[in-house]
Amino acid sequence: MTSITNSKSWLALAEHQKSINSAQMRDLFNEDKDRFNHNHIQFDDFLIDFSKNRITNETLPLLVSLAREANLEQWKDKLFSGDKINFSEDRAVLHTALRNRTNTPVMADGKDVMPEINAVIDKMALFSESVRSGEWKGFTGKRIETVVNIGIGGSDLGPAMVCKALKPFGAKHISPLFVSNVDGADLAQTLEKCDPHTTLFIVASKTFTTQETMTNAFSARDWVIGHLNDSAAIRNHFVAISTNKSAVEAFGISPDNIFEFWDWVGGRYSLWSSIGLSIAIFLGIENFKQLLAGAHDIDNHFKTAPLEKNIPVILGLIGIWNINFFNFKTHAILPYDQGLSLLPSYLQQLDMESNGKFIDREGKRVCLHTGPILWGESGTNGQHAFYQLIHQGTEIVPTDFIMPIHSQYKIGKNGDEHHKILISNFIAQTQSLMLGKKEEEARNEMVVAGFPEKEVNLLASHKSFLGNRPSTSILFDKLDPKTLGRLIAIYEHKIFVQGVIWNINSFDQWGVEYGKQIASLVLPELREKSATVSFDSSTNNLINYTKKNL
Ligand code: G6Q
Image 1 (cartoon, protein in one colour):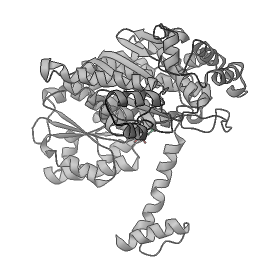
Image 2: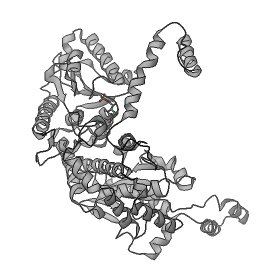
Image 3: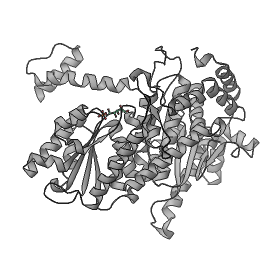
Image 4: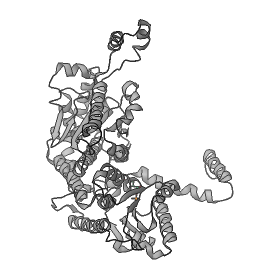
């Protein structure tokens, strides 16, 4: 395949970028009073405003042509129909089947996967309900009050983010906790909050071999057995989610307590599978199904909406425009919702693990920038920290502002004063990033405010803002399970769109596998008393210094 950078639309976009490189969004808004109208998409209660990006009326048609030239429509078909598009692992990519609430057959390797998916959802329903109702008892006959998910990466971030985001929908009598880091502090501090009689551990690991998860799981097992004085207690206090049944059984978890999933579910796309068990227990299975239903709505939208009106497509293309044509290499996720404070980390994995790749589908080095460095923090906290750089730094950071119109909580004056302040901050930020403030404007402001001339001369430039900084706003009515499902699926498909255009496989993760492979190289050396000499001088000395002082 010839590189996308030689395609007609790419070359046209490069020319177009040159012609608008110095255009100022504030002028574009002044010249076209309707700019918002033709640069937003509405989908039920979702409003996606992309008008504060550095685009003109010519940009989107060119970007959409690029998507067509990259065969996006055909790639969408391959995604949904179970083709093995994760060719480097010889796997289909079927997280969309997990939330296929219409139950139309989805084939993988010639077999409809829907019956198996539905059977696991039914098993999750029965189990989560028995834990919530108290029918499932701990070894000493007490009901479960704490559920600890032990997992890492894709087996942790999704459930942790969702349980935090949807806390108001959660059971009041069950605390969901998450342990991921092999740093013993993580498990130790979590266990301090747990009563062994009333704690259920979910060991979540697709492979059931991940060093961090297994180390934490073994220590948690020792803790339970140590407190309850009987290894038979494992049956009541441990369940597993894995594709590796034999390893789970070897750990001592009964086959009845294994929740299955499949190799065609990538770790970072797995919260929709049984990896979501902690979500189902905390929120209840009906809310878990609503989460699935929300994602399914976006799957349908992504499948059927014309490219020009397709939310993930437009977001993906604007991302390409910013990264590849403006060279803006990072992207900030700024949710104005405290519940979504883990969303930046969640999306960081989803995006950077999917598209942080320099080898294309033909095995050659790509000749363009791929995945952006994704980062972020909830608003308004970030405003008092890194927004300084976003407003006045030398690096331009495109941003996604995410905002529910209604809060999950009623508190303060009239029950909504906090939320009005939050909304006003979000809107003010997007406006000022776009508008900026010329030095002359800063000077005039200071003169009107009565500052002495000397101070005006000293400070006007410091108080100026270049503006023209791109942002996209994503609004919805209220953060609930269905809405969150939609939001996550929008980003999943956005990432897919970009991977298609960059001609990379968004679904493998050899960088992560490499980390797993090298994790055990140093450990034997740390256990060995004699001096280590087999590595480079820095590594040898780091090991030897540690051993000496351990
Ligand atoms: C996700 C990655 C990675 C994975 C973890 C945990 O796409 O592959 O984050 O989820 O490394 O792996 P296990 O579930 O196998 O323990």
